Image (cartoon, rainbow, N blue to C red; front, side, top):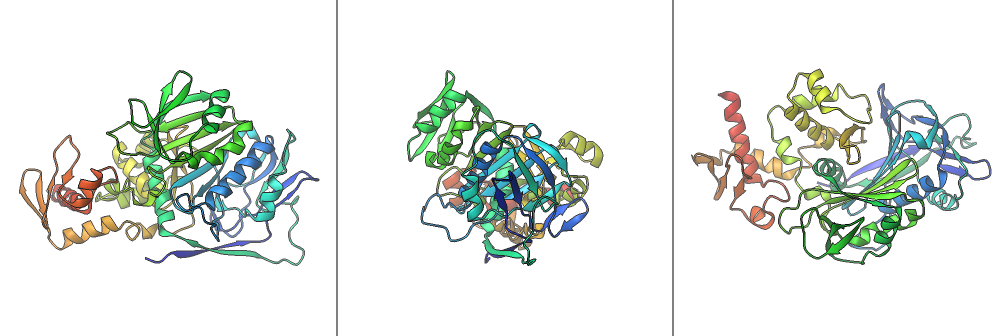
Length: 446
């Protein structure tokens, strides 16, 4: 499928007036509780820690324009997504290669002002703005306006600033995959300021390494160990280096180690009143779009209807309480979890590892493209429709020429090359999905 085009339309370019102490971030079309708004206005007030926020915004822009496995210049850059959740502003971006997800959470203690509206939009981050942000220093506060208000001048001629950039399917799928993958992470290590600075500055340039807790710091090894976190492509953490002078600590998140295969991880730099988080794919050349973490939940029979029901309950909350959503919707906790995955594939929820909770936001793309963006799921449904799944015994199915085993309490297996290569580490293959779908349909009709 060819990439879509996304058009940003701003009433003006974002600007930083250092003399007046004003940072005006221009917004493009976005979602609020009242629906789609052409240029929403979310916040007007004081950014109490201007210098780390400015450096972190530059970091987000650097991630968005980088292709980490091929450092040739990228000719386009997607503008960061910003969500106002009432008590915080969340800025998100994805690398051009789809293997690094970056988020800056500006928390309530770093903001002093008025929340005009909650919702999600894109903000203009242009080259002149980045140059101006690089000059922000010291401890002086900065007035911040996200969207037009009375203190930010618009262009005199009323001209509209427009940008058109490609919106790759792998980037959209990456947003969906990363929130599911991150929801399986736990905190593995917490470093103080001095240890965090030393660890990041001493990182090697290349390789797939494992960070193992050692006293108050981490040591790098070539092999996994209990409690270790995979660091695939340590050069991808270089974007943290300019932020180290503001850092108060570093938290590291990852899943349980299973075998020696590379795994995703999250690296959260603590800043005054803020968090800057990088989530890394299992390999520098491997984007999140092919991980398949969403497929098990998308394969359910009720998930689309459940997602509609749960989605109607969302109000741009900074933390989604799954138990409360289960109570409000009348669904089980498991079905709410699957519904949140489905909503994530439509860009409607993300996941915050620091708070171990989903949050509501609305990315600017069509949630109806879920099936098209997951070709393995589409292929599995085609297999079911063609009658290619035949069970030959309890938990054993022939899917065309492949043998699938669905053993209670164990991970499913298949004889296809995909499963042999990845052993389930990149989600189920189409044959497993097809066999599971047949079982699910039989249970519904029983």
